[in-house]
Length: 272
Image 1 (cartoon, rainbow, N blue to C red):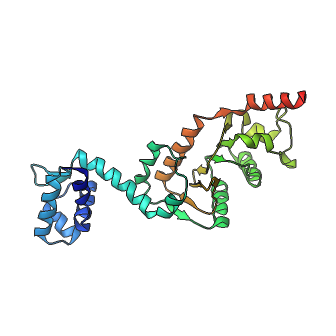
Image 2: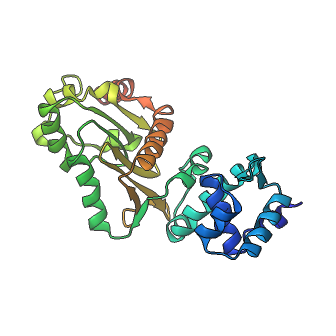
């Protein structure tokens, strides 16, 4: 059996649906016939072909179940399904920002949706911040000044975990809003609340934007060398939240603390 033969088994929709059904639960011939509304002889033919390819097997009690090879294969197929559902997004954006290990987990994201309206996408981002209660993790190549007052009010109301990854160039060009103005040597109340030097880090370069909170997650990837805010993936269900958190943590572990960098920049500025 070669790979082409294996893929060929799923060129038939009925056989593919049967295989997917067995991935969820072990079943007998009669159960599959009733569930899929396929004639008995055709069910038998599909089962025989899948058994010959070692994708399923029949147990002593007459139930059919997926094999270990089948489990691996269905994981690959699930990834393909998600990519095909959002093929325009994945085909037109730089996916290299997503680590390969997380790319292989895309198949778990059954409920993820895509959005292609810029203004609505920015509002979706803002709403995730407004509706959060427990945590906010963000990755961005620019400071979201309009959201800082919202975050400040949330921190006044209750404690929550806030962490952010920003692009290195932002540290050089960022001007602190007048309302929150203070030097980094003497942080004001807001920066103390978020524990700036522990909870904000920088990356040399950021090619995507991400916001994940307990209320949902949204992801923007790069297109033609710039982060594209006109299209995104968004979801409010636990699988995507966990996946987005893993993406954030992957980059957090590669980031650097800003305090030494800021001190270096301030010293350079004073010497000049």
